[in-house]
Image (tube, rainbow, N blue to C red; front, side):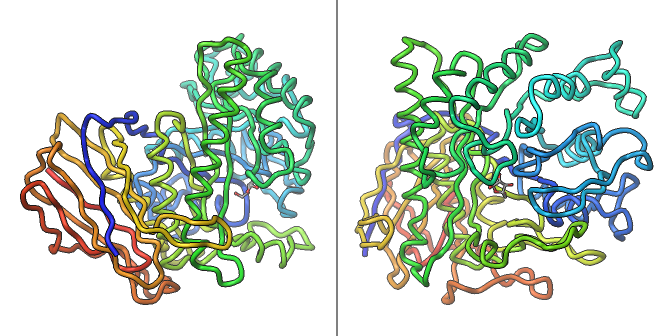
Length: 499
Ligand code: AHR
């Protein structure tokens, strides 16, 4: 099989958004407790944060982290998590049937975010709460001082305002599982009222309205149109969430999951622009893909939530293999390709819960297979995203119809004279000869090339063997006369750097 792309700096889509490389820390399972926070851990710093997890977060190149949920936020009282720890109430978390100790809250998260060098993306509870509580948490977080809640923050040790710019107006309000689930019209009204009130205090906030929890939702499309009819002028983003898994051993379909992601994004762009046209608006709504990943949700659903109320139970601890990592790499290709409209994104989640980073209680932190394509893309994608129309053979899938075997995107950093090509081979059997026409770019040499592959698509990393699956550097990429040639093994993800 052969596939080809052409790199041309004239075919620019948009700048690479640093917010594309966001992640997510929810009060769920062991994401917070024994994830980012474990005061008794040998690596814990004076604030109780695991420095091994902080190191891996920075190594992964995460730029932004969404907090505190997720489904959790729809029952959360933010004030439970501030002030002296001994006074914080222990509560039931209905979303994950767990007990929340509230040892970590807003101020702790912000301290962690500064150490991790990430921008916070904060969610407010619009499930069991409303406009007043959203204003309260905003005042606590961002007001400089001289009011009850901002002075309370200062008294709690955070004298400087947290200055959080990006806020999610609730979470997955279209889902019947969500506390306070409502209709699109009801949510659109609540979102616009909350947004308006929040903007009355700070006009420069960036606000995300809930889109659909997935493109399979029965209200998908109609939900986005209705919410935006209500809230178009007051919000900046509409959210998208998507999780993929391999069903019934159908690896060929699973490897093409990004085809569905492309389609989902294109549909939401079309819906947002339909509302724009109807309103005669000039502003464009951007997309926040603030939950995306591989998640073996059907296994979680089959097991069911805990029946008691455990503290920080092992929940959603998916153990990823090579094919999962290739799909994650392909989803990043899809997100980059849509950089003109997807200007924020969060891989869900960061640690222990459907996560690229695993942290054993009292033990080591290690990289799952899915860590690698994220880290490599975050580090290498710079400058402008280039449109590359891949010429590729196709194959038939049960879930997505006929799909290209090869998918690719490129970035070009003109001032540095550097380009990068990100490419996957979705074939389960065939090696693909990949040709890159670099003549318009004038690239002289391949500065690095790394491939993530293995004869066994189901091979995994473990705490005992954490580097079993990792990108391997290769030196067989030939660039001559403006043409680069490289072989792509089956079920593989590759980055090629050019200068
Ligand atoms: O990321 C896990 C869960 O998936 C989140 O809490 C929820 O928003 C989504 O359904």
